[in-house]
Length: 215
Image 1 (cartoon, rainbow, N blue to C red):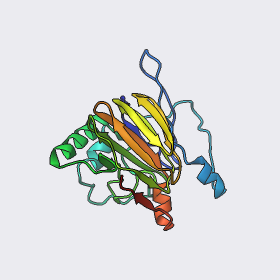
Image 2 (image 1 turned 90 degrees about the vertical axis):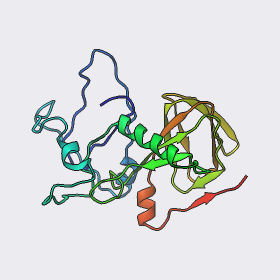
Image 3 (image 1 turned 60 degrees about the horizontal axis):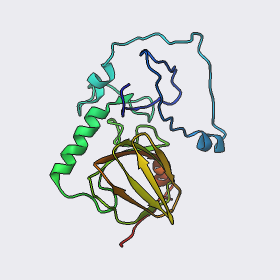
Image 4 (image 1 turned 180 degrees about the vertical axis):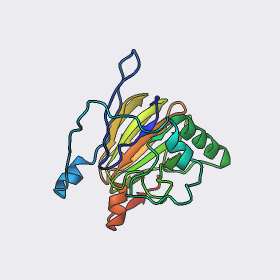
């Protein structure tokens, strides 16, 4: 895991956390626990060891699934993405390429969604995850949607007007845009924002709506 990487914990899969470096490490955990609890579908089980055994070389997931190709006879066991780590270096390169391809979207700048390469859906079925580039000086048009969204600033600084409140932000800050709250972003420098929400669930239930407001 490196700064800016997006790492998933596949549903119902053994996992543990560790820090192999000599420095403290902090990451943002995005959880679907409230939704799972609402369905009374939460389960957990402790493993026999503090650290699980490594059974495949580093890079196996990328080799099998991250090149726009899939092993010929591979069939997914569940809806979760077979890719566990989406490196930021690759995401940043994709955003930069998108920026060279045309003008920014009025509401989002240059925004991409993370996908499960086997289905084209969200990496985790209950959560949508996104990364967007706001060029220096970019000011977005007003926008709102039914999915309350958590934002994490990966690069740059700027501000967001959420309803009537203006929130200044910089690298490593987090902020939340509640459901159906109108938001406008402004970037003082090139800025990159990671975000996640329950949009995939709302879309499957035909509940998701958006309003791309004009100034």
